[in-house]
Length: 198
Image 1 (cartoon, rainbow, N blue to C red):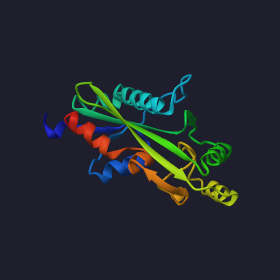
Image 2: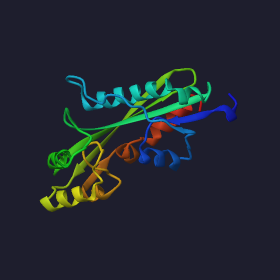
Image 3: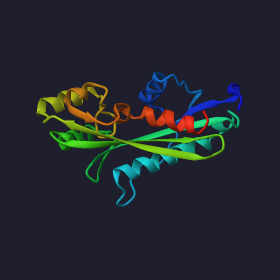
């Protein structure tokens, strides 16, 4: 496969995912967010939802005209992050009420961040890996929650917070992949791309 023709597509509009990819020396040729319905299915677990959405985003992105125009040597990377408390799926916070509800639930407890990356290679073969990061928050005071809500960092974030921002001050410990907690598990991403021939 000629290097000149190889193209990398990131199926995400997330600046955090782009920064993470660039941190390991991968610069996408195209940012092509794929819009899929993110509603959980009945009885779907947080982990399963993360895997399904990453796979659906990768397939949707690969079918788009902008990606097809890159030619046959395009690799598509898509990811999805879901925050789970037991079997409960926490929403991507869009309103102050969402954010406050998530932070109230996470206060003083451990939760899981499931980040799945899916890679589709030029041959159309798809492979995915889910990284599981355990995060424990300190007990949050009213002031902690209100001051975090004022920061607006929670907007659009799974579980109502961003671990790489101010909420890092709430974290007592993290077990697992830090980049997975941010939204793109780098070890798994690089491994899948190499295995697909990138």
